[in-house]
Length: 129
Image 1: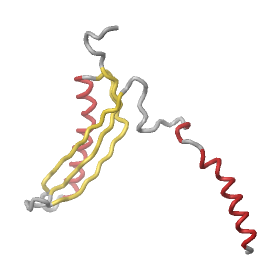
Image 2 (image 1 turned 120 degrees about the vertical axis):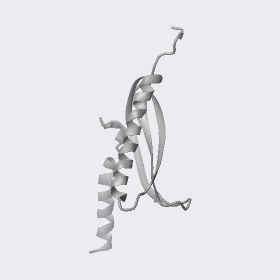
Image 3 (image 1 turned 180 degrees about the horizontal axis):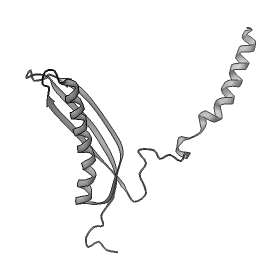
Image 4 (image 1 turned 90 degrees about the vertical axis):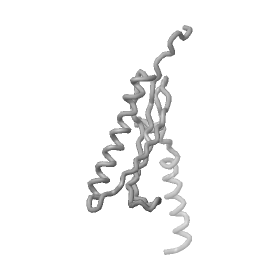
């Protein structure tokens, strides 16, 4: 194919796709996980679990550890509702697992993660209105 024909064709393809590339995702009806409703604040909690690995049960221990992580993450909203929040919803969650043997005492399964919540605070007692 002729180079003179390829270059204009490529330019037309790129220019035709430019409007699609320029659209913002914020206009979509789906809510961004970092966007919180009006009147709410964002609260983050870091979670870290260290569990000694017993020989032969690595996979089951990993599943149990991850379940424990998710239970702890889910309980964060309950604690906030019990103490300082009128409403709480989890809007972000990340986790990772790895095996370490840093102290020479045998392998340990590490589960680390972050939970992000949108929280509506309770009104301050005695606040002026």
